[in-house]
Image 1: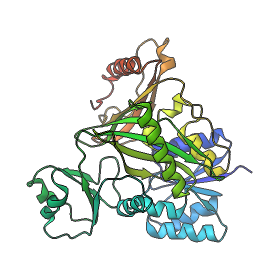
Image 2 (image 1 turned 30 degrees about the vertical axis):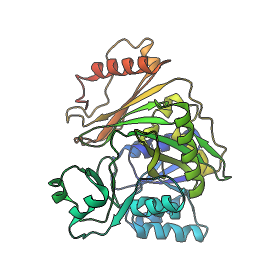
Image 3 (image 1 turned 90 degrees about the vertical axis):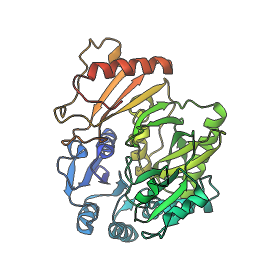
Image 4 (image 1 turned 90 degrees about the horizontal axis):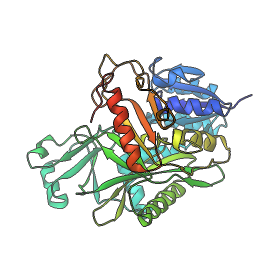
Amino acid sequence: MPLRVGILGGGQLGRYLCQAARKLHMETIVLTSDPESPASHTADRLVIGSLDSVDAATRLTAASDVITFEIESIGPEVLLSLADAERRGKVRVAPGVSVLQKLQNKALQKKWLVRSGLPTLPFRALPATFPRPERLTRKFGLPLVQKAQLGGYDGRGVQILKTEEDMRNFWPVPSVVEHYLPNAREIAVLVARGHDGSLMAYPPVSMTFDPVQNVLLEVTSPADVSTGIAKRAEAIATYAVERLGGVGLFAVELFLSAEQTLFINEISPRVHNAGHHTLESCPTSQFEQHIRAIAGLPLGQVTQARPAIMRNLLGATAASQTEPKLNADPGARAENVFVHWYGKREPRPGRKMGHITCLQDEPGTARTLLNATIETLAPQLAIAS
């Protein structure tokens, strides 16, 4: 009987996790509130329900041997029910309920980073009501960054307050406030940890964000940093994942200051947008790696043979709900360009509708190829630039 993998969340990450599980001859069951979600087209079975529903989680547990997550925003009661089911031997949960509880709340995560001796920016955790937030500028200065403790992703739940006037828009929610790091670059390291404690890190990647929507726009792999910085980033990320003790794929996002100092921004206990390029650029994609880890299989190789650049397709027009196709004669380009479309029905500004990955022998030629591909697809999509 094939291993049954339950996945909480039906987005594009779940879509590719299902494909990876099928490649490894496993069965997938996805819990999603939307029967037409991206993962619904690749899952073997669906459980329709809210990620906050204990009843839906119980049905998923009954159908699964191991349960994992493609999104952090799982209700606390659901997590408690999963922990109870695992204690009773009904199911395994990976990366682990306690790991998710620790990381899904940004305040708890930051405090754990400090306790673990991991580098992160100075911060303050705040309750929903905080009198006179303008006083925070005395410690943090301006600009400062406010992050909602729960629920933020894809640019939501984060705001940069640049002026005293902006401070009037301080959110009345439990949040974390931290220094704004000027002229910083952002990189990420994907690290997998197996049941046996084995660790495997992908080469660090550079990340570029949309300046208006604060959502990830491009990923370049390997990262455009020195060998020393790359090794330091990998060491920090690997140590963090080892300390967490969970099983699966983790994305460790870091800031690189103008002074070449690294700070952990946040850790995601799941596969991540920063690793989409691994579908084509590495022998083992981040999705297969995660499935291998939670299933107790040996971790796969991650050596990257060629530089890659990945571009998210954001905010496509309503008329562009079908998969975009390259109009040019494929030729050699077909070997180097990979267009992915997630099958989402409702395009919205900043929403990730798909992505493009280009592989070349040099980073510069990969970008040239990416730009040419985007120009080809422009008539079909309104692609954020």
